[in-house]
Image (cartoon, rainbow, N blue to C red; front, side, top):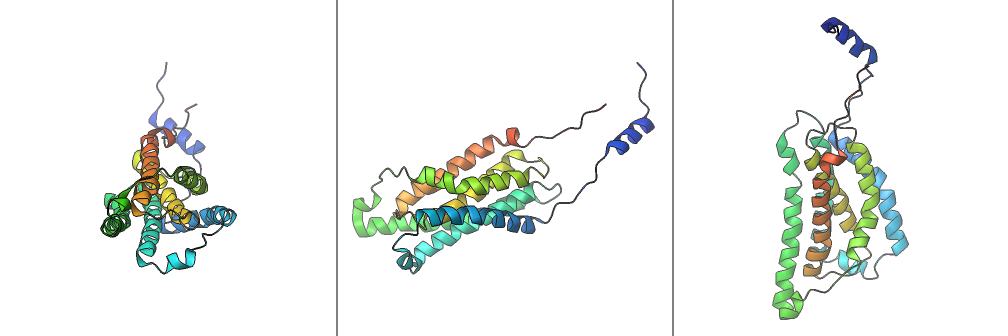
Length: 221
């Protein structure tokens, strides 16, 4: 079998090469992802109906902090996921979502302490809330699909990190939307059932990262 010359290989690769389109900046891709996701989220919230005490909740400072922090976690995670698919970007960008995530968990933890101080042991009773898991999955499905389509256009250099951040983005957005119609506001309940569901889905997505994001090698003639 004769060996292929380097010049011949280069010519063959150049002949089969397709035009390369640069990805938009992570900020702009996050804006596009949000634009795709919001109609889905709004449709589900509209279908379920806003909670009757929403006006009172909007005047509750701690509730608003939890909502804003959950939403910020989703947005920062989306931007970090898009950064993770671009070679050469700094690794510290992957950890930016930890800032709003810490605020979110801190607000929920403070709520648990306040419930315990005001209600005693009754404030820390944990009940089953099986509506959280299907609710978050249902709301997060649209954003997750949009995220999957968009991150597949990047480079799978950190597949587990990218898919985990993508799932966290969809989960953060879904949790913020869920609380607009789901009236369970006990801090421990939210921490365990809602945040726990988001973290569980994030872990599963991260473990499946190498399966979802793989290098696509061109076939040689």
